[in-house]
Image 1 (spheres, rainbow, N blue to C red):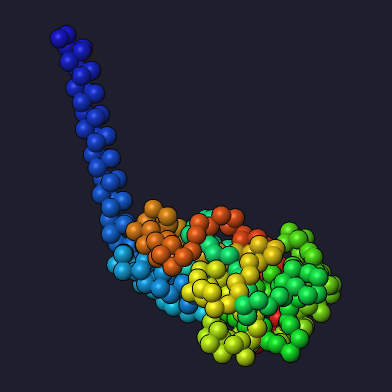
Image 2: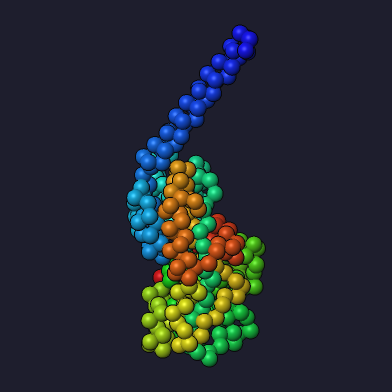
Length: 305
């Protein structure tokens, strides 16, 4: 080999060694970043069992279970430049997007797109053989029934309750989800619908009403996953228009995706726990609901329990 070729070969070998060192150092730094990661994850009580499975699968994750309206209040109250005390938020519904919308003029808290985990359709559970569409509209549009309260979780603190309120408004007014806006909610056809529902809602009534023959509330607004235990004891009526509760992970720190994203250990455990509980794929991330700003307007319009 000529002296020139020997010099070139030595140069190439040296460059390869430097490259390997850089790659190795990068891999070590990435591993250290992953090992050093510590996350506090706010968890919607509706997803508590799923969050606990996620934390069990990844010791870097600490779960903080609290109602989403409590998390919202804390995030909305942050001063400019103040860091949130959570790095991710597991919720049923777009609570982080709604919280950001309640912070006009401030930097967004959400980092990147949410991770949509799974979803389950909303349903109405009522007495076997009972019809709910006597008013000529879809069943949800006929609520509340005469002399009956609706078993609706509070839309102020429950993603299922908020989705249920939206379902009733969409069905009663005949408005498409994409067309529902603040004017319809605040001064249009949704006003009497919301007023009537506010006066006849029992937010604490659950599936135990099956044993009480729906004495306290009829029907119950719940999810298909939860209603699976009903069997033949009651009628389970699909939502019309179709509405789904969507389980999602909102990121307030991009590093949280390492654990809580779809390929992270906690994220995989979260999804498996939801699947085991009867939840299905996320499908439409909006769940057939209006956008987060309109959902926030529905919350603001709600004066019921």
